[in-house]
Amino acid sequence: MSEHYFDISPEELKDDVIEMLKTIYDPEIPINIYELGLIYDIKISDENNVDINMTLTAPGCPVAQTFPGDIESKVSTVPNVNKVKVELVWHPVWTKDMMSEAAQLQLGMF
Image 1 (cartoon, rainbow, N blue to C red):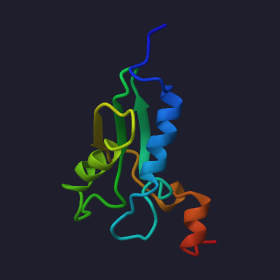
Image 2 (cartoon, rainbow, N blue to C red):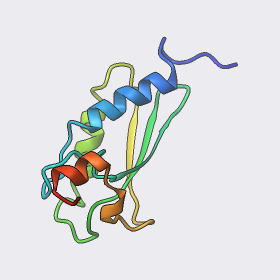
Image 3 (cartoon, rainbow, N blue to C red):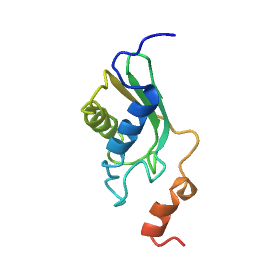
């Protein structure tokens, strides 16, 4: 079994990363990117490197060029995180069904 980079498990670090993602809001919809379902995958390595696959609500979104870098900067401030890489992916295509129930309620979709 390999030793972890810091005294925190990947699961605990992932929880901390998710908490940070919940503080980052979509620029067009007043809901955080995690509850919106824009985060597709979060991987934590044994060295506490964080790889995030995410999408945007639309490929032509005006923040497509800058938003991943903004998210990398914010997630890199989470204690015990080593390196962060955010990759923008377009498959599967984001739909409103990917939003959490809380986000759908907040937007009055029920």
